[in-house]
Structures are given as structure tokens and as C-alpha cells.
Length: 82
Image (cartoon, one colour):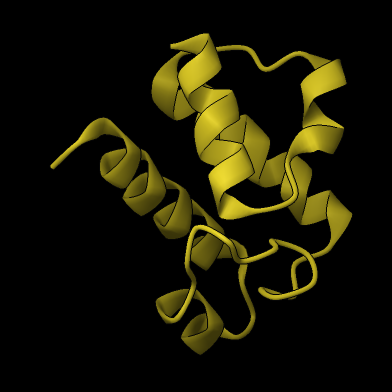
């Protein structure tokens, strides 16, 4: 599995732990918007970011957090810090 696919899988597992509607996560793509499509709120976004930081032993800068709109955005930001 390539790095992008592995990060996507990890992110979706983290998101699923916070999602009320798990079926949305199963149909998510890299273009899925975390708040609009997957129906998570901004407080959950911070939880997801903290979980990703812990999983990958990275620290995402505050200036990058607003840039995370889609799953792909999250993948690219994580890769930036790896």
C-alpha cells in the first residue's frame, strides 16, 4: 500500500471513531469534505488532528489547520510533517 493510501486509511479510521453516521465514512473519498460531507463539527476536527499528531508523532502548526477541508487536504498536511 502506498503512503497516501495508508494515511487515508488511518485518517478514515480516526474520523470513524468520532462520526455519528458511520456509513458516510465507508463511502468517503479523498475529495470528501470532513465537515460538510462527513458531518463532523469543528470541535471533532481538533480531536482528529490531535489523534493524527499522536499517531504520526508530528505537530501540525495552527496555520495549517484551516487548510484541512477534505480528506486529501489532511493527507497532504500530514505528509508535509512526516
